[in-house]
Length: 123
Image (tube, rainbow, N blue to C red; front, side, top):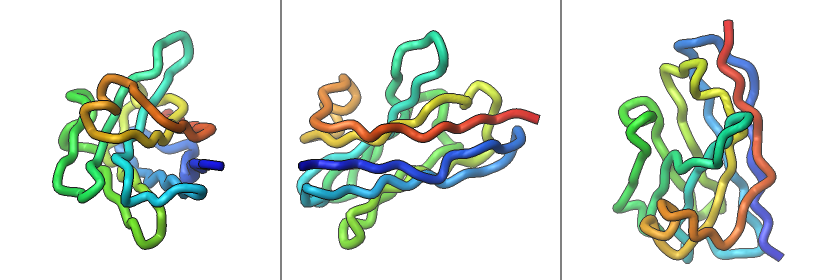
């Protein structure tokens, strides 16, 4: 049974940083592209970032380019999202997801979702 468990969310002031982690079990992480999505209240879930199986390809939503960085440690079966220069509009529940490719993730063709972790950016 595939499980993706996010952690690292919380309350942070504008301009601050957080690092989210996604621990995977029940699958071999190196066989999957991995991504992060977010969903704010009243809005659709949106793509944030993705990384290929080999880490050679990354992709970001325009709204987070230059501020967020996705990475993975296949030996630890963990994916990370480093979030810097956070803004109030980054407030959302952040979800980890697995898929076959970065392109699939960008079109929300997801094999498995995590349960989400809340990120709140507020002074």
